[in-house]
Image (spheres, rainbow, N blue to C red):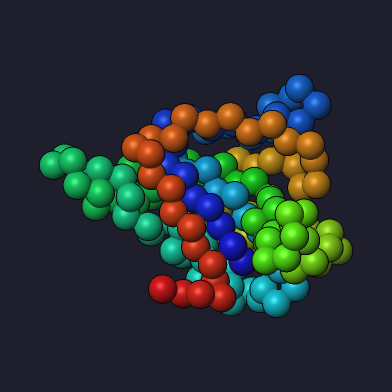
Length: 150
């Protein structure tokens, strides 16, 4: 699994002009899924996202998690995170999972994030033509890949 995590003051996603998910202070999480991903990846990544200390404490030091600040999460599926760009100028998405694999994994990630965050997670629509708006706070943007745990 590959994610781009953005600390936001607010974020929302629309499909066909309708808001499907919106948050105030929290994290916008773009999630790419590949066939090699497992439930262990879901558990590890969810724990990492919920406990990532990227919110300022009272001294202005990034020392608090989204959970610590009572923030929310907006989860958006994004197969393009697995774009291969080594050859040519047209990205290949061959590593991105097909919907029959990715949808159940995406749904499991929602459940795991809600369990770890202890509140509802807002979402986009898997495979939808989503319009995402956000106000990146900082900006703070973190990339995490479960196949490259640094």
